[in-house]
Structure formats: structure tokens, C-alpha cells
Image (tube, rainbow, N blue to C red; front, top):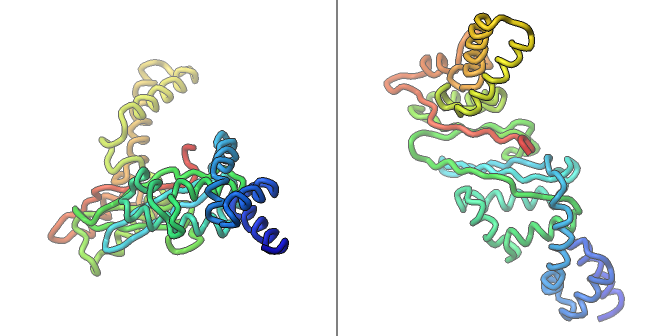
Length: 288
């Protein structure tokens, strides 16, 4: 092999792994200039390099949705900066694992152990990508909606492509007739993306969350000097407002402030009552 070919291979290996010149040359010598074997040789170095980045916070990235035959999967992949979220290698990696996520029905363990098109496992390709880009990257969360007990609809907000964005919501609705009122499903998915409900109904909101909110409300009222009897009445009204604002069916419909989501479902029901079975909303970096 000529010096030029060797230098080209070192350059290529450095671009793929982010590893230094000397280590790349050693890896190529050990693997007789086989790029894939060289990457394998450098994996331990790559892992060591990547692990140093794991203490950082990754709050940027992308959410990706995949729909096929009425089934829908959703995936969030995080990076440290929005600059990396726009990186071609990062986007291509996310696209391919979104396809795999659909096949594994949102099971992250199976996703990480699945092979990508280059024959390497997702988890190992992730390490290589971290080494190459130089930022912490995490496959954070995923979910899968099957095609039973209703129809699925999704909405992508701040989309960079049709199935990629910063906020993505999915909703499963029972009683929808395809081609007749399925446009409503898309609008409800949009409402969820915009209004961020916690649960379908008030009863579905975690009791611990409600108790914590009530505790905060009461403390605020006491600190403001309100009498105890007045505080109880005000806190009851405030917690009712909290429950309504965070339960989908009781939220004000984003397209008509005079109506609630429950009113819209009733208005669009025919022989069968429209019912929201489940929903999910991923906002990139939320809660990290």
C-alpha cells in the first residue's frame, strides 16, 4: 500500500471514529488496512472516549415517528446541541433506528441489540457516532401504538421532515370512520402537541402529582396571609382548575375557545361515541 493510500485510510478512519492519527495508524497496521476491523480494534478506545461524554446533559436532538398499516412508533434521540441535531450523520442514524424501532415495536433493549445496514449493532454504531461527532448522544425513549382498539393519528411540530421534529404527538381514537371524520384525529393530535395534557381524564392524573400541586397551592395561600377557611375554598377552586387544564377531555379546544375537547368528540360522534383511548407526546429534551 502506498503512503497516499495509507494516509487516505487514516483520514477516513479518523472521520469515522474521531480517534487520533497515531491510534488510527496502529489500528490499520494491526488489521492489515481493513477499515471495519480497524473500527473494531478501536472500539475500546471509542467507548472510553464516549464514556467521558456521558456525564454531560443531552437536551437537544430529534423525535421521529414511523407509521405503517395503521401502526405507529415514536422515538426520541438526544444530543447536546441543536447543531448536532442538524448534522447529516446524526439525522441518518436517527432515521435508520426509527425504522428499526418500528420493527421492534418500541422495545429499546431489542433496538440496541439490532443490526443496522452496516452489519453493526445499534449500540455499537451509537458509540462510533459519539466518537466521531464528539457529543453525548442518547437513545432516550420510545413507544409503539398497535392497530387495535381504535385508529392512530400523529402530528409533527417544528418538523425538519415529514416524520421528524421537536414535538410529536400520537393519539388513538375509538369510533373514527376512516375517510369521514379521520381529519378530526389529526386535529386532536395537533391539540395534544400544543396543549400538553397529562392524562385523558381528570381521574387519570397521578394522585401524587395532584397532592403535590395542592400542597404548593395551600402554602402559597398561607404565605399570602389568607384566612384558613378562605384558603380551603380557594385551594379547592385552584386544584379543580389544575385538573381541567391538564386532562385532555376538559381542556379548551385550541380551535374554538368556547368548547372543550369532550364537546368536539360528542359533536363528531354518530352511531358510535368517539373515545380517546390513549395518547403520548414527546417534546425533545423535556424532563432531562
